[in-house]
Image 1 (cartoon, rainbow, N blue to C red):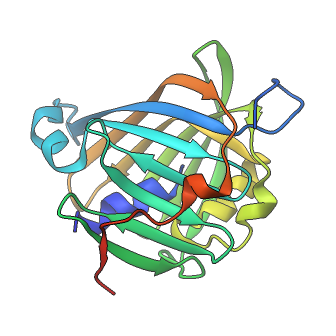
Image 2: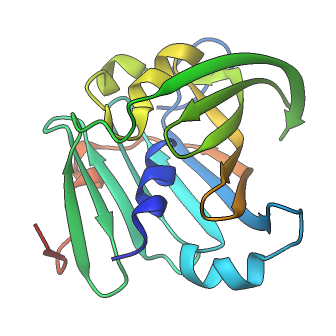
Image 3: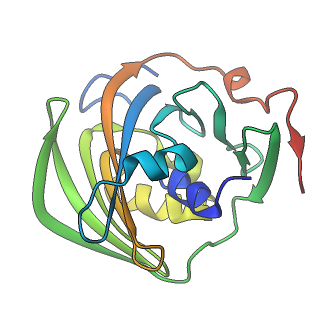
Length: 209
């Protein structure tokens, strides 16, 4: 099983879209980069462990992600409020969505703004027990966050409530104890219809718990 930090980071994230009106369902492709706390690029080192891309599929109550090699890395089922983290050895770990991974969750709205894929993005900073994360999101790209209201794991429900359901197009996670910074930036947004069957537990994966 990959490092639990990967599961927590992915859980932050993490219909057709008409900007500013209908809710989004579809795919967002992200690219990863890593630096140490001094700003030195260590992507080659950590990319082999944590991956280089995330292909994120989301609808009004479910999501899943694949890495750059099309290996599934996470799945959330809103009906059962269950999160699954996957490893390349065909095993998975099941986590109750009610589980709180941090006692602290402090949100600060920032004056910083960025333009990402043509969207004007607002910024917030989130402090948890072990990380500090800056998120850039656009109100024009939102999901129906009520379907994730019980998703305590990774504080995804708290994030969505703070942003009105807006998805992040960029986030920068600082791990002071582990000594690195993980930057995730959206490369492509693809609206698409996604059915319940698209978020079923994949065959061939053994649950470890």
